[in-house]
Every structure is written in structure tokens, then in C-alpha cells.
Length: 78
Length: 192
Image (tube, rainbow over all chains, first blue to last red; front, side, top):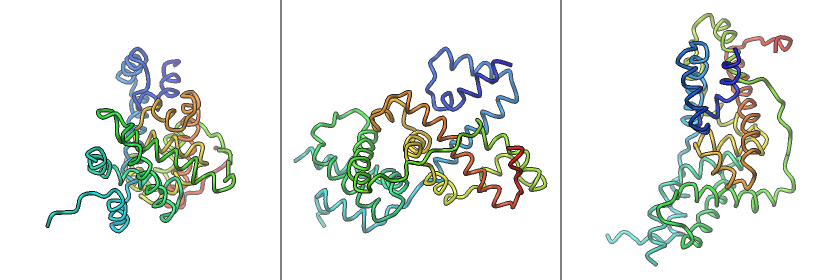
């Protein structure tokens, strides 16, 4: 299945929205017809979400205050 | 100074993203704070050159990335430019059956992903050699377009794509190894 190989090779670029309209349409059509590829794509899409979700950080309050002061944000009038 | 007052207002909302990125770049809090502070100062001074209506976050990330490459990393005297072992496509996905079997069916595919902790994802990213770590972080954590990443890192878009291709696989291998450790699965190197 040449289509499957093509799809898997370009899957990450596809999920990132980096393929041109023609390739995007081609891969989307294939995904609709090919359950194994659809599952693969679904997993990779979830993986990407996990990456983004798991990398958040709390900015230390004192650091944030320091930068804010550095930028001379007008003081609260109170 | 209307411009610069505006700057603080608009730019501070991006600090969590910049700080998280700086932590993954420098791998420690003190350096990450220095780097972010440096980037904000540069951005503040250069805000006149920022075109209102364009992407402020991408502009700030470009400054951060530049500050990291030109200042922070330059001080480090050639850090580890280690190569990344090349592994097969979809490294993690192809090993899910083994993971599921070893946990006696308790891990559906999505459960495997849910079990990966924040600390494991962060460590997996930080383990990547820098030339892969930055593109992967900027693309897959921050969601920047390849073209934006090429501009930030000042490398051709084809280079961004090849580093992403390899870096993503390397990241999946690390995540897989964490999952394996969690479940004490014996992996068989022969079967790859």
C-alpha cells in the first residue's frame, strides 16, 4: 500500500498543517478509507496534545514581579 | 512612552510560554530567569520595530531564541553537540502492543499517553541534543509553523524539517523508555 507509506512519512507534517492543499486532501481522503492509518494518525495527534499539555510551568511570582518592575509598568494608583 | 507601556501590557501575557521554553533550553531555573529577563529587556528596547498586528508571541520567541543562541550558549564553550540515534518512524506507536500486553491489557493506547507525567515529558525533551530539541519544542509544544521556526533559528526550512523528523522519533523513543520503566517491561533489543 503505497498510500499508507506516504501517509506515515508525512503524518507529522500533515498534523502540523504543513502540507499543501493537494497533499492534505489526499491524506485526509486516505485516512477516511484506511482504519489502521486513521488509528495511527489519531494516536499521533493525541501524542502531540500530550506534549503541549505536559510542558507548562508556573512562573515564580518574585521573578514575574522583577520583570514587571523592570518594564516600569505604571504603578497601581491605589 | 505610550509604545513601551503598551509593550508591558501585551508582552507579559506570554511570559509563561517564554519561561517554560527557557527552562527547556537552559535546563535550570536561574539561567532560565536570566534568559527570559534578557529577552524582555531586548524586546522592550526593540518594541518600536515590532509591527503591530503581527504575531507578538512569535516575535518574542525569536528574541528569546536569539538571546539563547548568541549569548547564553556562546558562554558555554561548545556544549554537547551529540548526535541522535536514528530510530524508526512512529517508534512509540509501534510498541504499544507490547506495552499493553505487559500491563495485561490495563493500558489502552490513550491510557499509555495519560500515564506519561509532566516530568517525563520535560525530561524527554531536555534529553534531546540541542539541534533537535529547539525545533521539536517550538513545533510540537508551542505549535509554531516550520517557516517561523526557520526564521527563529536562522536555518533553512528543509533543515527544520529534517531535524524535526529525527528529533520527533528520538523524543518518542525516550517517552517509550519511560513507559517501559514505569511498567518494568523487559524490552528485547533484537526485536528493536
